[in-house]
Length: 326
Length: 122
Ligand SMILES: [Zn+2]
Image (cartoon, rainbow over all chains, first blue to last red; front, side, top):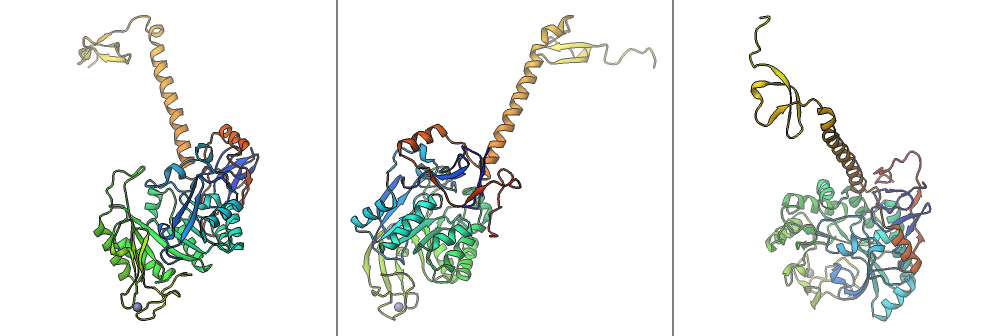
């Protein structure tokens, strides 16, 4: 039996002939590991960049977004579980879209960037790499929306063609990672450092789940780590939990929990902390950290007012706001 | 004390309607539910204990299999997939068999379901 060992993610799956990795889509056929969803996405959409969420990267622009089946984490609260917790052979909708076709469609749709998202692009790594390389050559940017459960070497290689990433940091607690996602914390922290070192624009999302990871002391520890390891200018999005998939027993996150979390993270030194998935909240908007001037006002995924200058400065005090603005 | 009658009365073999057999049951504990061991009990009751033993063996084997599969899945080992369905969809063009990056033939020192060999130390 010719088994193979996958080196892509920290699981290090040892896969016998005819079996799949834990992600369901990387399959050992005849002693060779095959990427079965390469060029076969099951989700294709044009989204606003704010939906990723990326608030400091080409705000207000449309981004062509794609995903295939499969994921290397198994979050109990996954909002895309019909996509992420299935193998390619279990999917009904599969599009045939080679990297060149993705590029053509994205350009036709008026997008200047491509997002690898929804499930986790790590499991369709080769498709992401090839499409990103082609996108770079044609002047488009690439954004990765991921839980960053990936090994250092493949990540560093992927970073060569990445422009931005939003990483879902689930909690600053290894036991919770194991319990809720089936993964572990340390590889994610290592991946975050690598993304920063490699110069990829980085934003973080933390889904705040009542009773699971809403402890303010843990939120403070997470914010401190981000401030020390990634920098105070790293935007952090606290996102509101909605009961779904295998976590319907917990209530939606109360607004005040998100407000406390935001205040705690800002007190720990982070300068751009947002509240997401809560329509119309003031915490959706970007403010100048020096004088509090509202710079980009948002309602949901839509920008309702923009005072940030074209080169990314506060019009009142000329403070440079970190990000990729054009 | 030699020759004194047993305090609890004479002991004897008995069996219960549920099939449980006691070799030495004090007579005072026998009730209407206990009956005398029939002479031919071995041939009549062998199927029941054998059936219980068989059930326990099957339950044990099942638990072993289930816990092994759970361990495989839980530690990120690998997954069984519907290979026939996969191959059909590769053949139809719905899926692909593009060679993946980042893997190697499993080395003898890599046990199955080994975690952490490619962890954060690289
Ligand atoms: Zn200002």
